[in-house]
Length: 265
Image (tube, rainbow, N blue to C red):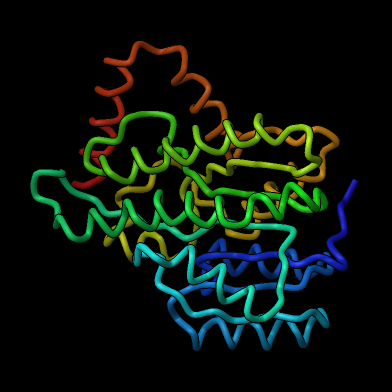
């Protein structure tokens, strides 16, 4: 069953490229109006114009830096001023950085925690009452396969995505009677700008998938009669993530540390 989103509005963060832009495109194809959020306003306007032209949907652009602590409240105020109510929220914005934590830039790490964790929580809290009241849409929080094991060399990123996974699964349970579909999406290596920000594709493990493949799998999960609280994108990634749960923690740490160290060579 394919769920159509006509008559609903979806808010997508990190919508200027990659998974965010692809979520916007596939939801527009299903009839959803859009609120596109990211820092790069020019890219958002280009995307909005294309989706309006191709799918006849409305697309509102809000340029916002989610590394700023008051971003969730400002986003809510911006929608309230426009009289926009959303039924679907895609918390996609996030970034990573590679390198030992002892050498990491403190300000950059603080920004990562703000974007990947604090703003995601804040935006979810701002809009979850509306989402559960309506019950027609979905909440998707983008985690990562990095959420399933420690990530030496990407310690803050891996920990932030572990938070997203745990947080989203808990929200799925708390809201299970509302009709809202809640999903933590954990992609593996994906052809997006993520690795441009990281600074190297050496941080990637496994076969690269396209953004279109990842988003299609997420929407297919939302189409199920019983939406799972979390999925891992890609069959091989899903198997690996499950196997990690059966391994001693010390062994998992040693293996992931070795893989990430070898990928940097």
